[in-house]
Amino acid sequence: MKLRMKSALQSDHDIIVIGSGAAGLTAALALAETRRVLVLAKGSLTGGSTAWAQGGIAAVLDAGDTFDNHVRDTMVAGAGLNDRETVEFVIERAPESIDRLIELGVPFNKDSGDLHLTREGGHSHRRIVHVDDATGWAVQEALLNAANASPNITMLAGRTAIDLITDRHRKTYSGAGHVWGVYALNEETGEVEAHIARATVLAAGGAGRCYLFSTAPRGATGDGIAMAWRAGARVSNMEMMQFHPTCLYNLEVKNFLITEAVRGEGGHLLHPETGHRFMADYDAERMELAPRDVVARAIDDQIKRYGLDYVHLDISHQPAEFVREHFPTIDEKLSSLGIDMTSQPIPVVPAQHYTCGGVVVGLDAATDLPGLWAAGECTESGLHGANRLASNSLLECFVYGEAAASDILAKWDSLPEPPTIREWDATRVSDSDEQVVIKQNWTEIRRFMWNYVGIVRTTKRLERAANRIDLLNKEVEDYYGSFVVTTDLIELRNLLQSAKLIVRSALARHESRGLHYTLDYPELDETPQDTVLIP
Image (cartoon, rainbow, N blue to C red; front, side, top):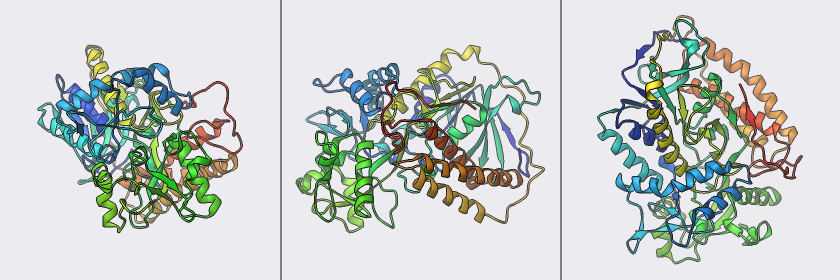
């Protein structure tokens, strides 16, 4: 524990939600009907992954589609590692989630009065509800507007969560492992605040920034996963890191996603020099509509085999008006970079895109730790298995945000009042005059994770990554124990912890399944098994 000034103890709220994206705000809105809720956000309230989501939300709304179809597509994409009960639980609640979003004012695209449904890779039917190609931003805006209008919700931006408050932080240690809130850094004042409550919902997003190339926002440093692990919660399937096949290749714009829907609406993947439509060589039946892991490995193979910097994604054979109407955000961005997607191919490369593993939760969104629930990308609910089906992620946020709220409210009378919590000790640290250490280690982690723990893996590469993590771990912990906390230092600590969990999980899986592909174990085991790590 450390910081020069003492922490402010704050317990004016019944429930704390860590994260202001789709999962966190969905939970907050449901809880706020009867309870006082505090929402904490690192950076801005719109800085999470939700606002970046281009594609849409998967839901069975067409008469020609069925829940069974959606379940089957999800299980196929997840390579059988999904929990079927979870998959059914989420998919059957999708129409209700869409109805609630419509009530909140999300302006979904329509076609002749009905919701317009598009199709993405891995889906057997058109079932993606969307707002042009910027669904996430529309959802984020609607949820924030509703939260701002609620008298029972307080939102604090600029709060970097440091650690969950557990029984070890009580003035009298009980050893019960209960979670009572979170210590968070006020990014403006430098003060550490202890936010205390009877229940805490963790919705802090994924760990995409462990990798050099990622479509995730700057703050996706695995904070929630690392904090829950340190507090004693299990994590599962951290080796299942999804790489989006098509991130724009541009030296100035390093993480602009080209949505799955471009391929869903007929985009072709081509060798940039020969024009060969190469997906026929990897998955002749599904071509560009194969699941993301198949497409990402195909692109990776083309780049490495032929020494390419990128491949081409081409939708210019579609009418120009069709392209502009369906992808206005992408068209505008590419136009600003001198690329006309209606007449030119788009240079693309794979990039880390989604964390399919995370904190283990049940159907009630409860974690192993009393007092702690979790939802969204920081969790492993059993929905995604070994690979997330496109546009199932926002859906999971809505369903599990609601599930967390329902379980908390159902158990409210049995939840104990928080004990007296120790203030953050500020007496044994100093300011750092070596910020370059943080930058150096951050860069080193992301580079070796990309090179050694990327789309295609080997045991030797994973062991090299593990060795680097062991060397960096002591250095980072010594640094963390000696100097005043900053957001960069907190993120570095969580980044390294998340990387360690990813590598440990990858080394433990002796098969190739879904997103985990290793040259040393190319075959598929007969029985799918989760990789569960226990603190």
